[in-house]
Length: 344
Image 1 (tube, one colour):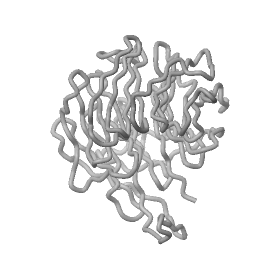
Image 2 (tube, helix red, strand yellow):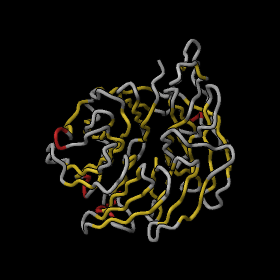
Image 3 (tube, helix red, strand yellow):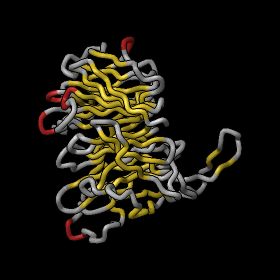
């Protein structure tokens, strides 16, 4: 049975491993490395094999988001359980679980480490709230709750301080959220201040630039936007006649040292998926990458009307690794397969 992948991320520096979260309630750790002699040279590298290292099982519902601590010793996850899980990478056991009576009242869509020394976890959920948890205290009650959103909070970002922090804005004290209500909210939790940028359509994806001066916003109108942190202006839009994103939560990212904008595409037919690549500065499409789907003979897709539908592979998550030896990136989606491109 096909189990779509909802969460996809590289481990923290040096980004050796890939973690995935799926509808089958499991988290998987992969090693995508291969011998250096087989390095491809073309910009569009052929897919490469991966090795399953570990499976993490504690979720009772789908896994929707994963964030890895900078030490690579722990990671956090969330999903339909209405809780946030903190994991030990080596033992594959949960260290803490944040939730309960004072936690989210519906599924948790996104989680991220935050604060100095990554002492906090920030989560956003379908219950329209953003909640902050003290990692060290491990209590069931959040230390702060923000409820400005008028609809589901689909994604959260946060500054981590130190080398992982941002050069401008609130640094380790700043939290960014994107919501189905069409707003991007910037919280300064130290000053108790919130700034709001109106996108006007459901926000599904956020990624900050390295200097912290901008954020890439994905939304359900088939358009990605690069927004200015300081004044909320839209610096550039990324769209195309053949690009569609109106239904799925597609996690987009930057690529090639922030030269590219990369996203999966809903506008596909059959088992093969597609990833669209734009040039950051011009907004022009520079590449369309075909992602070969899994063989799905004997598997049927039944729509809500009870009729059989054509099965498609929508790439719902992309992640990019910059390792100094060439670009490696990976993608995954509704067919449950992780595809890795580029050198080790």
